[in-house]
Image (tube, rainbow, N blue to C red; front, side, top):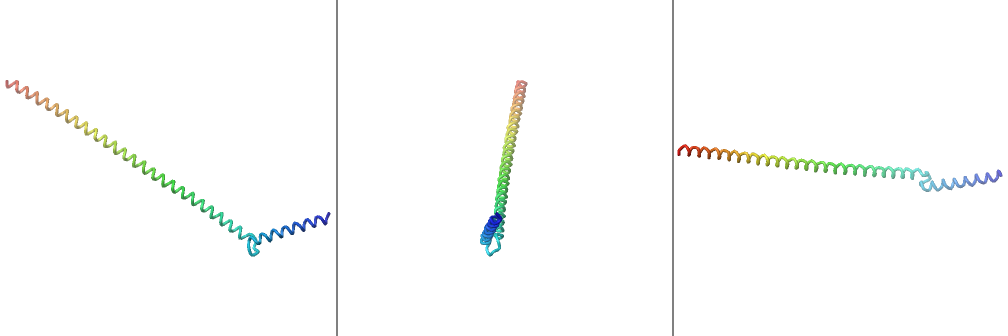
Length: 123
């Protein structure tokens, strides 16, 4: 039984040695897989940076769109206010014209009455 255990241990050792040789091959120059891990870390960092850049670009685009929307809303509000002011001014002008017409009518009526009265007196 002890011999069988020793044989199993030897088999495990040979398997571990074979795995180590494979790792050395991947790393290149017998340094192990350290370079591969560094490359993977660099790639992950680059991917994270790209994702962060995309998020920042999306946020900037959203901010620009919001600014454009705010500018459009403000201009529309200003235009509506200007139109309302113009309408109010036109209504005030019309009311003033009507008042002037009424005053003119009243003045004309008064003058006519005076003329009529004068004529009556003369006659």
